[in-house]
Length: 545
Image (cartoon, rainbow, N blue to C red; front, side, top):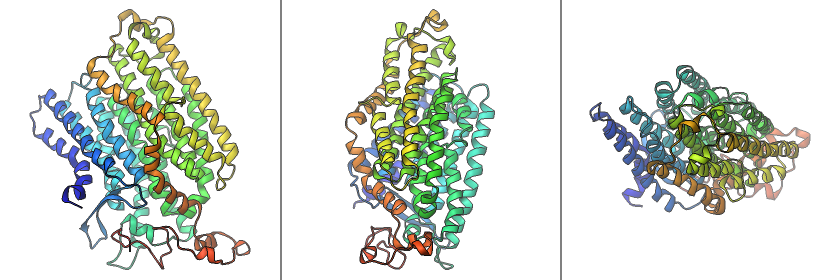
């Protein structure tokens, strides 16, 4: 492995941070320069991430792994790497970066320097969160996301921006504090003094904790991630944040940041505490299904377009939580794919709504009507994105939802899987109702006030932001296999660890009368990373023996 390959992931993570430093050194009044540097840096970051996709070989190991001692005496290090799940979300983050900068080129004219710095710092924090394999490093990046997003909402948002920004910060920060306490507990019980570790791979290979301990630690991790998703009833910060945030903030929030919660479940909360995750999977699935129905019904009651799409995120991410809780390879694969699909489709919806708001200065549905007659390009692109959001076959949304539902129907680990899948499937119908209703009101209804003033159609700059999203919608819809291949190994490993525990974990859960008798098959070698502590197959460095 040459130096470039060994450090490529680190370069991609911190390239936006370097761009933020460069912008900080530029004169304050040069808004055009600030936007130009931010766009070029975000484009270079996407270019730097392409070799990660091209050079990725699907396996249960972490690719592009790099580890450097940070504070050995305290047990934490700079340890980064990507599996297939993290890689897809990493690519989604770099893909949306240039689109976000270009989309706000005309809309943001005040305090441009701070705005561009916040965007680039936020991109580094999100990529670092996805790549971190050390719990301290993960928590550092996780918390670093809060400040730039708080600034984006609080400084460039709408009338109630301060309220929305404070609510967003407090909700996510309070949950994160409990997760930090759980991280400290894991460290203090990971070994003797001087040999304790925060390393995720080492903690995963050390075996499982007793069920009672797992219950409390899982609750601490799950609360932080549930708020970020957000899972009903912890979702109340999301509609306010989306409604008050600028278009770029909504794209990032819906496109990537919400996925940090679902990613946290599949990377940390469920694999680290498999017994507790298996025991609480029905509750997570139930909350997910409630979110699907509740979010869909709330969408029908909205008069603000951004607020409607915000509640649709509650419904879509309810599907993701249902898939993760079903604990089948099909459902979990669909959940991961739906994370990417939601980022593309909902990000595109917020982008187009932002363009409409830029022209009309209103998001009220009652103010629109007949827009398709004066802006056919906007109407056509909005229709494609709407069909993607409701999961029409041939678009990206269909593949993820189909896998989630079929995997939930066939789940043997999830109690009440069939009723949950049936109720969850109603979300597909409700989604078509509220999305097509919104499209009809805005683009096909009677002429509204906006038509009287005239609406300009998509400009060349705006086409450059919309076209990549349309291509992604169609490409994933017809050719999802490359993405499913990339996530196959980590998904199988996740299902094996959580849904099919080893004998000693089953013994710890089952009452004595129900404990199975030992058999040769139960003593067969387990998959890598999932062996008991007596015979780990992974060295602390992450290299196989």
